[in-house]
Length: 254
Length: 275
Image (tube, rainbow over all chains, first blue to last red; front, side):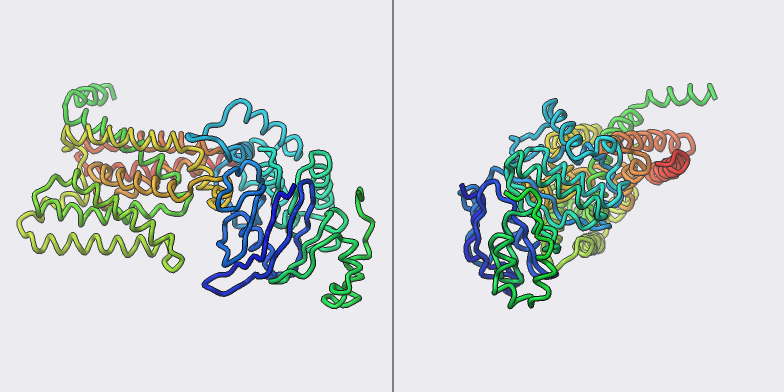
């Protein structure tokens, strides 16, 4: 089943295209690494898929429905890009933030009950931040906050998870541990993941599919194909492609 | 001290004091709750802007001999939606939208005051307010509208929370953020008009801002902020009314200074207890 289908998508601001000719489909259970250089439109693409940016042309389907008609937001989890200034001074506790991830799909007036509290407990445990539950969000480090937002995205047990540079604030060990966690969610829970990152090499070890964009689609396929692609050699140059691909010891290769 | 208390209890026998306490409590609570969301959205100055708009609106009402509170409400509500509309346009920043709307409101008031001549004194009496002269009808209106505001916040609590924390994330969750923003600014417009009778046009934004920032110093959760803000707001209004009664001070300004005292105390407590 196609969980996400993008066809000839163009996105822009003030009539100027920043992204064009993007087409790909994502089957259920896939782990897609969305890769590209700075300013290549990775975040814009994710935001367009989620309806945060209007598209100039093309179509987006989520779970078989045009995005404009899609309303089952509880089936989607989203970890936005964070910066140091985000949420400064905001008084909410980690538990309150994570619990807010349970609101999608609830009828008006949206209420959180006991079952939601238990789901919060479970996800705090899964993401290993139970001791932080009572802490204020702005008292946490970047890496801790990243885990909180991952917990918020996971707490409704979504089928499709978007993560925008979730490893940006993490040290190498925390980064590895996050990748392992995402891989487990992907493999054991059969959840579909779309992860934006700069790190083509590392994502290649975990993702089953790579989408490389640079304001247009450069490559869409498996990491192995990516490494063997003559088009990518032409794009990167042989040396750079080798640097990206030499760590091809895929983790838990299917 | 016992004499002071007996005089205080005696003062509560006066109808105007009872009205001041009842109206002040309801208005303070609704201002405090909304103020938390406005401060966190960095939209706190909308209270100031709408207060200035109400100067023009009240001027208009007085010119045409309409009830200043009843007929100001729709005008200030429309102004709040206008500010929201401008702020949502990428070419106008939120503070600029508030500033220009506020300037138009004051300019309207001044022009009308100039044209109207005789009612200047009435218009300028709204600048600094006086809760001790609030009428029974205004008390009933304050209770009704404050209950409406509190009901809206209770019903939309989670939507307001998630929108205040991260509006774009809220949209991805299917939260109707545009309508949540409309509800927030319309409720703010209602409380600003009511707050004018408590502290006046010039000081009405303090009812929105002070309790929220005092609560933010010490609360450790969002619910905690709302509870502390409500407490600080009601405490300030009560103490302000009592102090102004005993020492013959302007009530609005006294309430603001009590609020400021609460802020200092909360800041000191935060430093002391490391929050």
